[in-house]
Length: 305
Image 1: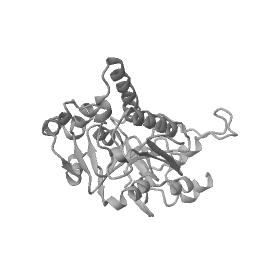
Image 2: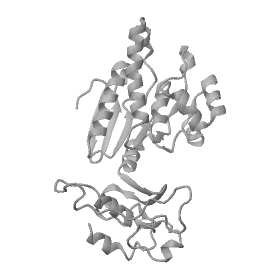
Image 3: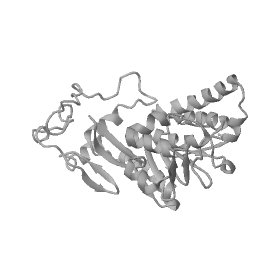
Image 4: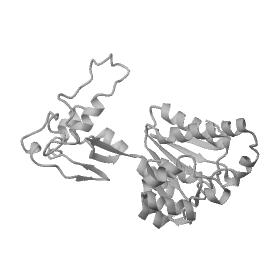
């Protein structure tokens, strides 16, 4: 896929979407919003893509809105058209059905802050600088910044950042909860891709298995993970025929059962599973599983693979 202002590539299960207006520090104009929408829709529609990494080319992640282009918008219809295109992408990002990892370095300013906060996970380089700079150009926070920022840092801190427009360095981004992790700039994409290639399997709001995607697909170690894979239709599947389904009802997340949350539906559950909550077991290579019987069930789960 060739786009004017965005680079798009797929590496295994990961789509990498890169802002690519380097001469303008990846500032957001109408074209880049449209290209981002096209790229994200491509990732959404590609069944092989399980995660998106969004980054910026050049010396900055995103310097915010393109003020030079905005100055040329001098009619109400033109302004409405611009905001419609921007709003379409903002909505898509914040409702995207697959995990989005923002890998941000350098300047993260204005509407660029909304891209980072709209992602599910934010990795930032140690040279990152987060600035809610809308007031410097006479604008109010847009692209959902006014909605996202109070929910990320709290209302009082959000008001401070909006009113003072002070620069927030990478370490403070981590402290405030804007960033999930700070990494050296030269390792940013490497860390983002490592994270994107891992899978977390959750049941009733708790991670039951976590690890590299390839390892989990080849060697699932939790009965729920195995059940998920067995429920995926194939080209030879006809309706529900041939698909394995779990018995029972999903327990209430408000009042979860004692012990392992999955034990009421697990075909391998024992009395101990109903009493003891399993702790994560390190299987090596970044692969962990929370199951009391994971070791003895290893062969059984392989047999159904």
